[in-house]
Length: 521
Image (cartoon, rainbow, N blue to C red; front, side, top):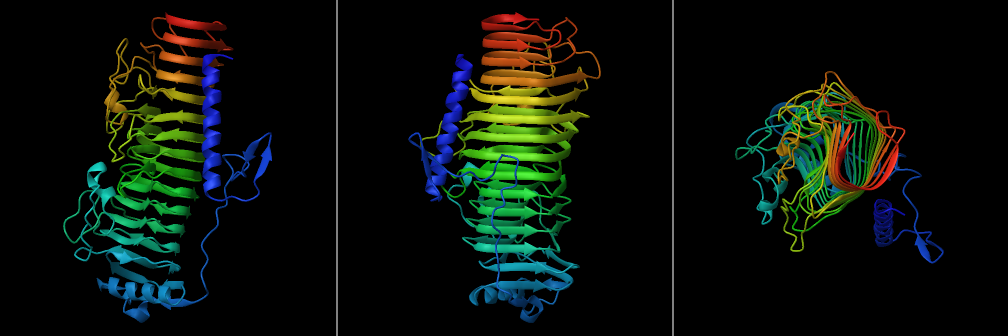
């Protein structure tokens, strides 16, 4: 067994052990023992099968907000009446709080357990300036951006709530801003901290804020049929578990659409596990599908499939570990990307913005990206089109990454590539932080167990740089890789590469090499 394959095998065993520990802690039933190993049930037959997490349920009792002083006239702040209806519903064992058609001006609504907010067609809740609560103090605010550190300055917020839902209607930010709000105003629409059993279904948001959904330390979360037409971030999952997002449409986002993250806002590392996103359309001014930048905790079993990305002005698929988190077990399938500045971007940095006393550089491992088509790459707000990038660090390699059935059409020569350049090791997480790359299609450094199978690059114009440049890689496989050559007749350029396998790749000779100190062909 080659060193690269051994590392990949050990990484896979490590992943299985993590999953077994997780299920044991969750007290899963029907445990069996095979050959001395404890075998736990899995959530789904494959990473691309809907997990069918349970949904919250409510008694058939209804409280109408107009009966509590919220007539929906759009004239005054109706938060007190809405809060009274929610509190009454909660105090009486839960049920439905109903919003008839109308315009409800509100700020800092208090969410409670066992309550379903049901908005009739024609009902809209809108943020109104002057009534938002002040951001609460947070002794850990230095470890993440201000918007992540405070929760009370939201259009609606709840903490330690269980069995909660919002169904239908429209919820808009109104006065809410993308940046730091003035006193009395807010920057988030819906914030839940340490929530369990949450459902958001068939809601439209015409105007967002810094976040539409900020969910921190939440589990068993469902977003189904949510439409977001304008915001900075659409959905930020901060240390969340058992999440399913499907049938959603997020456009007009200035920053991330789906952000899988983990910060230190609650004063501890919180892991993210069992996240499923499918059958959706996203447009982003930054990253389409993104890990980080906040990555204080670890990430396990995160899956995306049947996703169309219409714009991604940073990266279409972005995975960054910046604050010590281990990102382990990520799968993508059937992803169509158009308008990305960087199609695929994986980066490990040593920013380490975390209060964890044992923090150290994180890792990215066991990633599969399958059946991805990228067209119409174009410069983003942060710079030119960059090639796909996998960049570890000398002390932290990426492990066991497979790209299969990938087709990427690049514009060709541009500012994102420069022959012979050596990119820096940044602490910033964005693609532009590395500057130009010495490759036209894929720049790789510090990785083990990397496979490119059925990968095709095309260029709209000739390129000066080799399509692939790899530095310090142990276990590199190119199987049916196809790309035009650079202007100097080169396809790949390798340095300090061990356990190289090339087969079925036009323009490259089939070979197995134990060590390539430096070479190109």
